[in-house]
Amino acid sequence: MIYDRREHVRLLNQDIVGEHDAILHYLTHAWTVAYQFGPQIEQIAKDEMRHLKWLAHTVVALQGVPDLSIPPVIARAFLDEALESDIKAEMVAIARYREHITIIADRRVQDLLQRIVVDEEDHLHLFHGFRDSQHGEPWGVGNPTESVEDTASRLQLLVSMEYQQVIGYLFSSFIGIHRRSVGMGDEDYAVDEMKHLGWIGQQMANLGQTPLFGDSISAHEESEMAQYLNVRKWARECQHQLLPMLDRIIQHERYQMQNKAADGWTVGTP
Ligand SMILES: [Fe+2]
Ligand SMILES: [Fe+2]
Ligand SMILES: [Fe+2]
Ligand SMILES: [Fe+2]
Picture 1 (spheres, rainbow, N blue to C red):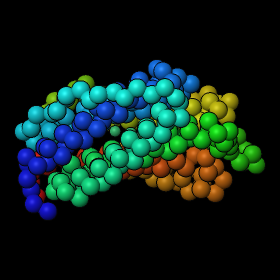
Picture 2 (cartoon, helix red, strand yellow; picture 1 turned 60 degrees about the horizontal axis):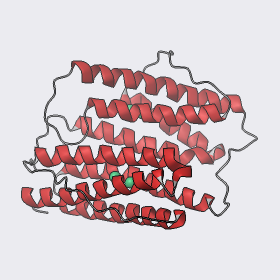
Picture 3 (tube, protein in one colour; picture 1 turned 45 degrees about the horizontal axis):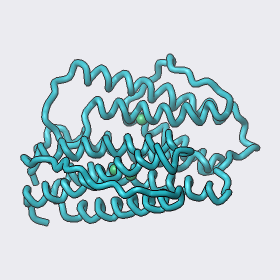
Picture 4 (spheres, rainbow, N blue to C red; picture 1 turned 30 degrees about the horizontal axis):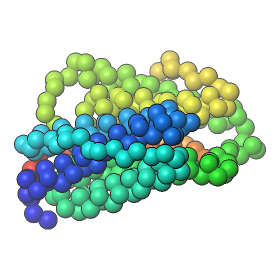
């Protein structure tokens, strides 16, 4: 791979246009034909907005200009048609990111694109779920033999840790020096941790449990990762329906660790 700043900007601008296109289509679907999935699809659109932001920062860091031209929106009259086009959009995006990862010879940009792919794969999974629920296929349910208390206490540990992380990153973002960077910063990490917290809190609420925020426990990234791997091992045995959520979080955490380990890295260094 050769390092070609202009070519990288061109490819990243394709990604920005793809994200922009997804945002407009998803929001339109959430407000119209797919209104029954409105809140969930709006959440997906918010992920795409964050992707667009990270890509735009990266383009600027590479001394390029982000392409914010507005893509045309194709109107859909039927729900299944809209969901099919959303599924296709995610598949196209995943293929395009994977291709760009092989071309762009910047480790940190590659890591960012890989981090975005993690979300796109989950979006694809969610859109499949919306489509299949239209055909009467049930959502996954937990193993009824596993005690609610056991599951809840494992999830509570994660909630406590995530909340410590949210506070820690927010604090860094408030007092930290703003600098030009590739990918995500402390505020983005805080938002990620809030999302993790929300997903786990939702699972606890489904079990009739109330998540608690106050427990102070050690929550540096390494211990967070260790806990997640632990809970994942347990979920593989008896709580399969938690695996997609846990896998997505684990991959987010991995990116955080990588991106921070790359501190001091400058764009373009081989
Ligand atoms: Fe995206
Ligand atoms: Fe997506
Ligand atoms: Fe987290
Ligand atoms: Fe984390």
